[in-house]
Length: 204
Image (tube, rainbow, N blue to C red; front, side):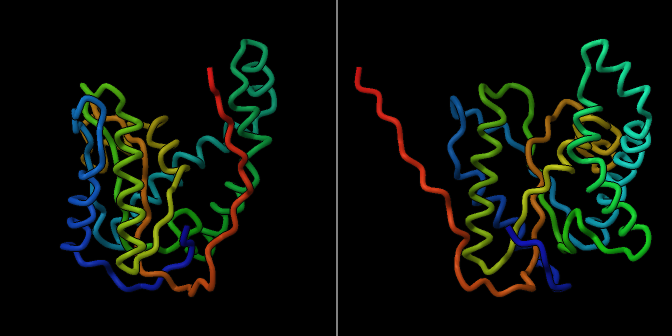
């Protein structure tokens, strides 16, 4: 995952090529109900970032209310309290830095983004979208581009439908991934290490 980009823009034809590569992925029952929304330049990505930031400003304001968190836990809704203990401080710092300096810790200064979603009717829409997403990530790397999956943006869009509408994505579509894209401002000497995994066999 690349979290530091140059200001060089990605050509629109290259972004469209990435979508063509994405749809070579398999899909359940060959439904191919995936969708791709391209944000082609830094201005558009920054505008998207501001929409996401606005959602988290509201969420942080709610999370700061300890009585509200306590009441929601009592009625079996612990999500806001879990957010407060898990993400609130990080998001608060990120928003403060965004407002004070304009530093983009959400999209990391990327100059493009692709939102991967699905239309109704797919048998396994999330899996289909994520297989297509992986194609984009691998192809981008081979083209000299950097990518990063932006989970906070996906979470905000699922909770606040107005963000999806603002991007021109129909309400009936589900968003599964947001990919930041651009030219890396980093030189990687090696790939990141991976934990050793011992596979489990079942021989019935």
